[in-house]
Image (cartoon, rainbow, N blue to C red; front, side, top):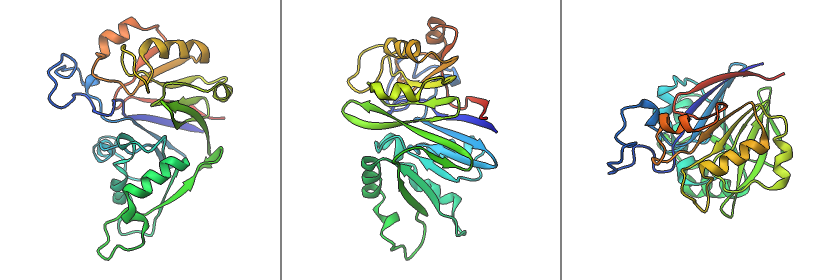
Length: 257
């Protein structure tokens, strides 16, 4: 099975450029320095699955030419990962389709609170997302592809990364529990949180992310959830050849046997 992965967004919670910031990265003319909130899209077997729907999801979906959506997986319930959920209604208007969403307990609780109007069954004028929530309790199969949840810690918050075939996607974390490394054994491509060079209590620095690359030992690593501290070109020039910053619109393909 051939899977096409598109990076919908590679930025941190404030996005890049950041509002009101005159720094050189925010003013950069390099399109790879324009970063919307973090999300990826997987297309395979005629289906489309998204991990996280942040505030930029409408723009991201249009930019990616997304004309269908079959499921959404959530890493956690923070605003920069869930606030675009309402825009999933564009894929269900005037149809009987319901989009399944999958998350852990804390994320589902937050989503239900923010989007209460989508779950209370009262929509006299329509215009609400048609979604059905599911609790992630272990690996799940969606349209022929298995998604294995990988628990990581975002400060003290339990967050989910996901492994699918030879690829793993981990964003918004500062610690990987020992038990989760076993789930990453043999991964060929990994996406890792690498916010900036300066320490942060809930995110990895570039140096810390490089240590994770050495431990996981993928063939290729991409850093995501990138702040405006990191310019794309100069940061890549300082990284090992098999490690790169990802960027909005980046695509790659891989096979799942």
